[in-house]
Amino acid sequence: MGLDVGVIGVGMIGQEHIRRLDGGPGGSRVVAVADADADRAAAVAGQLPDAKALPTGEELIASDAVDAVVVTSWGPTHEPYVLAAVAAGKPVFCEKPLATTEEACRRIVDAEVAAGRRLVQVGFNRRYDPAHRALKQALDGGAIGAPLLVHCAHRNASVPPHYTRDMSIADTAVHEIDELRWLLGREIAAVQVLTPRKSSRGGELQDPLLVLFEMSDGVLVDVEVSVNVHYGYEIRCEVSGETGTVELADPAPVTIRREGAVAGLVPGDWRERFALSYDVELREWAGTAAAAQPPQGPGAWDGYVAQVVSDAALRSLHSGGRVPVELPPRPDLYASPTS
Image (cartoon, rainbow, N blue to C red; front, side):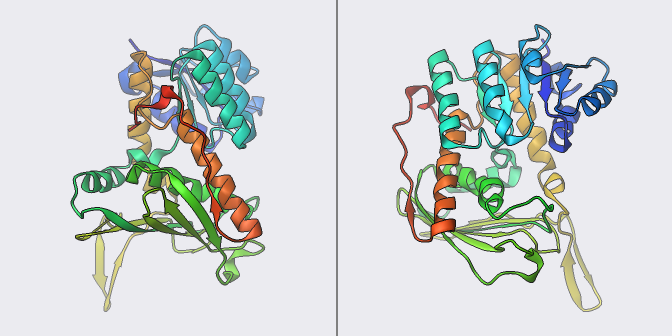
């Protein structure tokens, strides 16, 4: 049986997800859309064979025609939509962040615990990237012994004018926050943000940043966050272990040698670099939702923890120094690890 999906928020990422879900895995289709821009919602619905534009996200969630919900609207609107989907008993895929404050994320966790079933998946898509999955497989298989150090880089060619200093953590480094917890199977115990010499390309931004994470088992991680590198979009991760190292391979599809130089192609943005991961992510989510199974990907608890760590990193960015990360006990509902 197929999955009839409603999508709230039909901007760039919303339309990317619609493209994958409509006529996608298991016969999924998009049957309803909603957006703060009613004209845009109508235009998107008009391009889909079975979709209607509904006035509000709340009406979309309540619609009997909608089996499952995708939330890709503005971050501050995530909490009420996710809570409404949980109250309606409908699976909900929410792009990161789960919500924009620790308290809001916790309310979602509490609502899901009260409902007694996992319905929420958060869009941390690196868990679905084949290169990252191969990296985790190597670590879990003991290929380099116990991990000791991790070196990461998250580089953007540029960012839009509305991008702020805090977004370097809350929108950019948050991907590494979830990735590290999943990759190493440990919680983050403390964080410190260092501010190197500013790039002349960054304008008013403090760019780049160096973020240092301490994992609960003593592994140390450094993450370079650079959002104005000009040359392209690049994600790096290398793990140094007791008996060797393992790292993400260069994503360039070809290597070019000419005129005394060797060069490879660099992805232009996240859509190019992580296209396959989005394919896998949405296929797996739609499959579990259609089968009425709990989501196997990052859930509400993961979204909550990512926000707690992000908030700690922001405190370090603004005030300096090492900031411990304090987490409450994990509810029993989330005892089983996610993919």
